[in-house]
Amino acid sequence: MSAPTHPGVRTTATGVDTRLPWWAVVLPAAAFLALLLLMTGSDGARATTGELATGRVLEHLWQTLPL
Image (tube, rainbow, N blue to C red; front, side, top):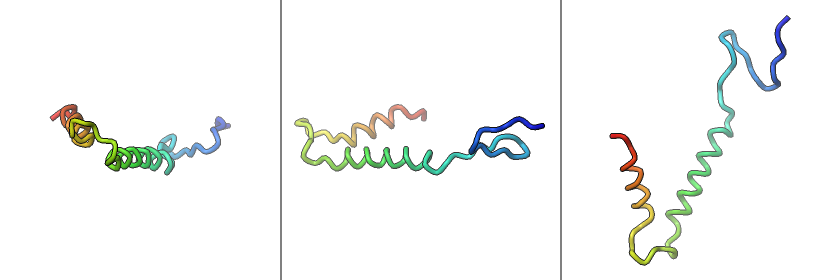
């Protein structure tokens, strides 16, 4: 007699199926795009120094990448 499995868990001959549902990929991507659009679309909320927020974010990303 085999052990009961949780509903929604697919098992294969090699074990448990590890595929992600569609929303596990789409929701983080949509959140990232929404935040990116909010950051780049705020023309009226610039700092007095004139430095763009997008340039600062890209500079921080460039410095943190292990190259």
